[in-house]
Length: 263
Image: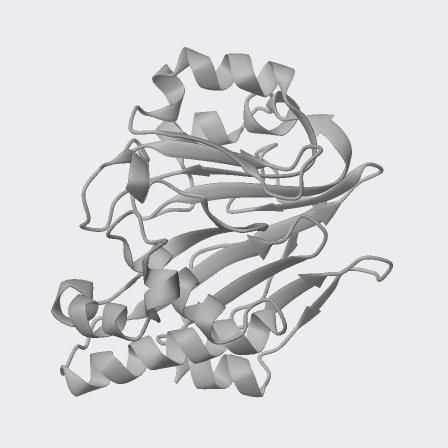
């Protein structure tokens, strides 16, 4: 399983959350506490929004703990919205194109989880992605495939419903193939202004997800970056966190769409 961090609020330097805390994401790349694997060394990535509507990306196959460029960039990049992710592969190759986050237009997306038996349904799942979006596919992961399929289902208009339709389509293929392994989907999506975080799974065991608001903004994490549970709220199983401009952060679900995705 992977570990990730998302931030949205007043501009801050990335290293304040990615590198500096006691249980920072860099620390979690070696010593994750709430994941199936303690080490997440199959690459990493950061994505951030600056003065342009499209996000910037820096991804590499080296482990986060050993990449001096990550620390240097994080000390210099100041952003109002950013993602950071350390990867533990669930079967696909360790390549830069398979490292999260993924981007398309103004959207960033990252995922922690897996489609059970993905190799057996990959060809049929990819066939559901329209040609215009499939041209944007750079890697081979189930995560990127779900993201592009959700874009085809209207992700820009309805981030919850479109993602639920994408996950539901994958579950349908799994059932047809007789796959008993679970689909687990803990993920975060943003367009730089709004943020949506999902904690879904067909077996009721989604990867962990926490959130906290401070004086500067909202942080959404796989594990508390200070190593403490106090002050962090857990997104419930089957729940979805919604952060929208001018509105308080709220957690909803499991609603109709969430139940369909977990069915």
